[in-house]
Length: 356
Image (tube, rainbow, N blue to C red):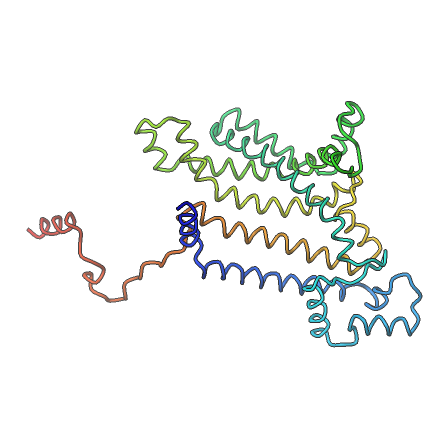
């Protein structure tokens, strides 16, 4: 019975047409982003064949072989189609700098970056959500001002600066955590604590602000005022009315935070010497390793789009008001008032009284 209820709720909250529209919109967005990523190769200075050849000798035979391999002698539309077809099959080319497969180079670092982003998101949730609720409940009081000030300080501090402070305090002075390196096996978590905290602090203020604004808005709702008038306990009001109404805006904020976290890994991985996607991107840009840069840009865009798609699909399940329903039809211009529906008994009595 429980599975039947869950299935019915999913069908009611997520109609097939709604899901297909969201997936189609995400696919179109990814297609547009793929065009922008493909343009990286065309925007690179110099001959694209020379760029792909790298530091090797640029003999006419080598240039011809590279042009034939990457279809550089074809029109731009054909080049894009060949590149997109290979990318869909996870054939992202070969790294100019190392000579290994781009898919292998990214796959070996994706796990570490995923763990770092997950830990940073956990830090942001554990700090931003409770502090945002506290600031919203103490709106315009000393606690609210103090919490918002801390959020501004965290938001204004670059991730690399907070990372250096964390290394100095918790690694050099106290010796609690390692200063650099990814670690191995069970030692991985202790190596990622400081990078995760540095990454999470940079986006904590975003969740704090969104949560505070949502709590303040919910506290001013009429149903919250009515619940207090009925004598409902403040704890029940907070759990069943206020926090429930903040789920959708906070979830939207989480999807934005994920994008910030993916971008912030570039600096954090450099500070803590972590061999993740961020450090790979920096090295690839430095050595003009265009295939790797293209693949990472496409991967990051796909991850952000996937996070936004999940958010769009989960929101109607959390808030029934967002579920798709047919809108009421507007009356035709010049239609008689009776076509809009019969008046209610109270309205009919008032009309009869005014007529007398």
